[in-house]
Image (cartoon, rainbow, N blue to C red):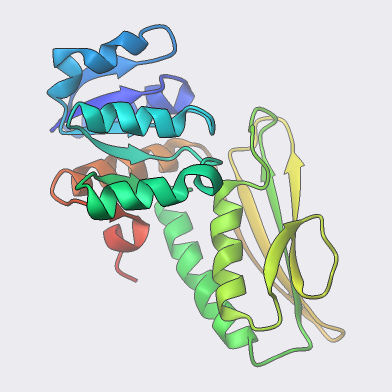
Length: 238
């Protein structure tokens, strides 16, 4: 498979290493200093572009890749509120392809499935309040994390007593999310159900970014054979 990389920071380098080890060819690498390469023949040869950039550049990167006829796998977060409807329309009505996930880790996919199942169970037990804490490295630009938002939306969907999530909010109908930025932490998400009698906590603690990079390459392999708006629920059947 021919892969283009959009964004060549730590994640981009790790994705390149894993992709090459799995026998794939990197045909184009685009970073902030060579944006003109979106127009290159090398980029157009890619079966899939893997994009990890910033909340304010991701959507434009999708548009430029789609213009070149290249499918996109993206782990960029923070763009959905402004551009989510446009992306959905492009994929559902205009034939574009985007595989998007807030987190590509296989462990997070499993954790997400457990989170949904637990929320459905806890809907019956109103004595338990629920909150979430997400911890990341000090370089992370958005808060709460995209993964925390995805997990929170799953809880709100399945827990009748929570109407929405909110960062640092304390209203009883709001699922409170707290964010911590510390050193070089790859990512920790902890969800706690607390009652006067006891407490239940589930936690995903990433040891490194390598799991995210591997998941992105697995998603690219899947995306090369599929079309439309894709997510980890398509890749992993739990």
